[in-house]
Amino acid sequence: MTDDQARLPMTVPGGRVTPPKRRREWTNYTRGRAQEYRAIEKLKRLGFPHVQRSAGSHGVDLIATNEREIIMVAVASGVNVTRSKIDADLQRLRDTPAPPGTRRECWEWCSTRRQWTRHRLETP
Image (tube, rainbow, N blue to C red):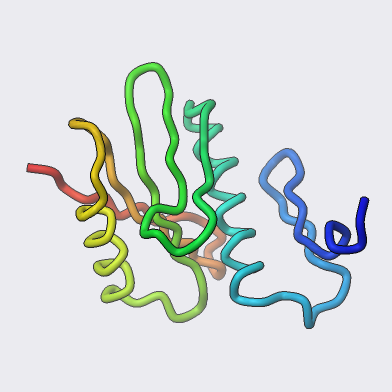
């Protein structure tokens, strides 16, 4: 293991995230990435064995598939997640091309309740 790998959060079975060794290494990026890995574990438990993480700010954080459906997920986390942030994420999901029937959702992680709130984009 390289020194850089030792500082990154690691996901273990069950979706728990092991924090970096020093607190100052938690950046917005590492906190957001940790929540994306938590969402990956949740999607796998929901029956989506194939989950792809899209690194970077492209509007879609995760794409998950199973035999019957495709779901695109934007992950929102932090103490100040507002409805306007969720609406902006849903708009980016709406603007992203996808096959017909693809579900689009924004998942908000509430750290105080330690649970996900799923906001589904209604398709016409």
